[in-house]
Image 1 (cartoon, rainbow, N blue to C red):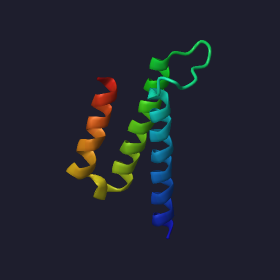
Image 2 (tube, rainbow, N blue to C red):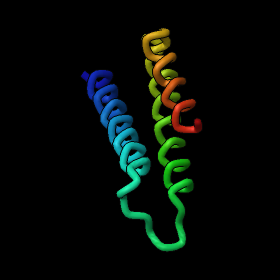
Image 3 (tube, rainbow, N blue to C red):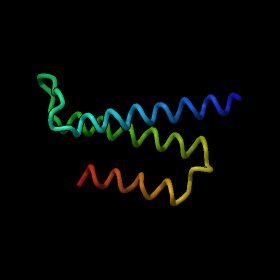
Length: 80
């Protein structure tokens, strides 16, 4: 069960980071004083990328084109 709990936690973290990225890309979202949307998006994208890397290192079963291609497309579409 430890592996299952660990995997669930890692997936939940990825989901949280993905949601933060989605919110940071929303043109109507709040931007704190002294910060720019670019900084928010960059930070959120970095967290999503780290989550994906962690999943790929911890769970090699995810190293498939069905995971790698969409992850790469996400990064490229945001960096656009």
